Image (cartoon, rainbow, N blue to C red):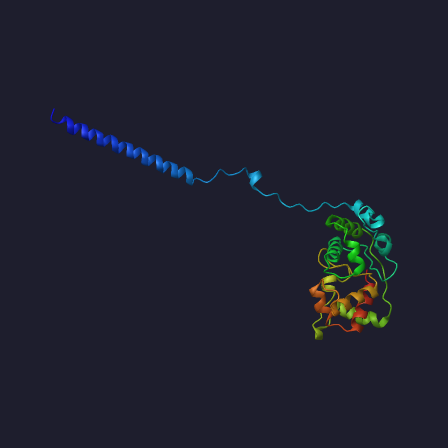
Length: 241
């Protein structure tokens, strides 16, 4: 009977220790649960939707080119650039068979103001990116323009510059980017074969004088060319096909 108080005391200590252990374990479990990351969202929801390219609607591009859209203030391109992109005068470039991406880029540059032209800046304002792609694609499917070089002198000098560049001035051959037959490289360099010589010459002057600024590469090249060289290579490109 003398040991009973000691036993009771020991029993009480053990019970208290057990209670503390359970409390400690419960706390650790709560911390572990709190540290667990939130459940992952389903893959379909967590993964952002991949951007999609605008679908091309050639028929819509043809309609805008030929008739415009009065409800949106879109003027028909055919008025200046002619049926199927075959303009009648050098004031307006021939656009037939031009690469769709190039045409769309120029329209976008006009709208943004990075390529200055009062008329085209106004024409491009109501166009959406989808409109630009549609028009560009329609034009890319038309037969390429045909032209002829005007003078023998220009033919010889222009051919030399176009095919071999001017090494003494650091001018690269035009054919390297616009291809030997002037067809260009899709999505990179425009078609130049068959283009009006006067139009090509005016663009080269624009690059040289800084009035056209949407191609650093062409600005660098044009600043190294004389008027005679620009006219010669422009005349030569007009006869390429």
